[in-house]
Amino acid sequence: MVKTKKKEKTNKKIINFNDIKNKGTLDYILVTITIILTLIGLVMVLSASAPSALINYNNSYYFFNKEVLGAVVGIIMMFIISIVDITKLKKSYKLFYFLAIASALIVIVPGLGTGAKGATRWLKFGPITFQPSELTKLFLIIAYSGYYSDTSIDFTKFKNYFVKPFVAIIPIIAILLKVQNHASAAIIVTLIVSIITAMSSIKMADLGKSFGLLVALLSGGFIIGRNAIIKGFRGNRLAAWLHTWEGDNPIRTSYQTVQSLYAISSGGLFGVGLGKSKQKYLYIPEAHNDFIFAIITEELGLVGAIVVIGLFIAFAIRGYLIVARVKDRFSKLVATGITSLIILQAFLNIGVVTNTIPNTGISLPFLSYGNTSLIILLVSVGILLGISRNAKIEEKTKDVQEGANQ
Image (cartoon, rainbow, N blue to C red; front, side):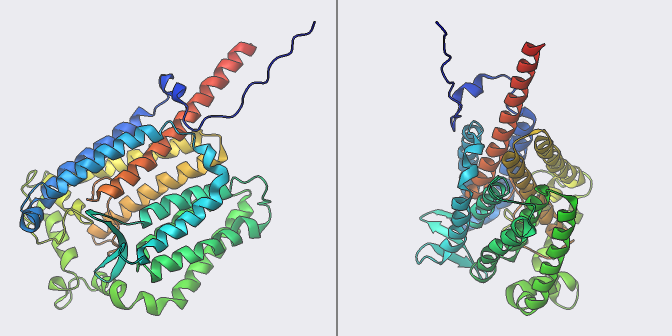
């Protein structure tokens, strides 16, 4: 009598709790970098926000308490997400594309969307306020990674590889520009989609054509939209950058940038001391937000600034090592998108604070105030950790199988 083997179940669970038992599957280096950045952020938010919080809320710890809550929730979610099998989302890329559009449009819903300084880009749910564009970016990373992992699509055809994806991104860019007045988010979205497209390239010839067409599209878009770019809210920022020290700009349009540069120059090598910043006393408006790097440099000096920049470089190296190691195409592209998103935002923010580029309104990941933004960032890192975990499990399984075959 011949025994027949029962078919083994090949479907993976979205959350595999057995994976937690596998020693060494969690990327502890990436976890350490992330938590150090988050802790530095908490300390600096407390320092930078205390004067503003005391004046506006009669509580020096107002912003700090909210940020701590975001950090705790975010870190818990990061570890939970790290055991999620991200590949299960691969086939739902169309859903994530529509979620990206919905998250960009939701600010126009009466009673939800709220604006400030000429831009309507926040959602308000009682005491909670956040930018849905943070979700838009994450949804797009998943959507485009899924699209370029769809084996039913012939990517040797240039229209499938480049034309359709970039036509699909136009509505989202238009919404970010016209509805949210959020040019910086539109730029980041375009860059991230471009990076994912480049990473998914089938042939170098396609990559070359893609780059050429992308440059042509961006150039054409700038020429067509130059009037919109150089006027109003964004135009003032561009003029402030080009003419920072001219006329009365230092006390008007360039005021925030000039005060930021004063803070940086005051820091010297080792800083004026933690909590001893002068510029945070309302000289830099909302110093705990986009310009927190200026306070870090003032209080902790060049050494502190180098440590922060070094941590972001270490994050980039670790993230791209995960990209290099993982075999699954979808996971590779998601890891590329998340790592690139965080690093792009970090160095664009630092560029603004040091007046290297015009003010973009981009926050510094993990460090700027924003508890819901911090949660989304930590969830993104959780996805990256999950991809790393799955890659290590696959490597262990392969090693065991090779050992058994010898």
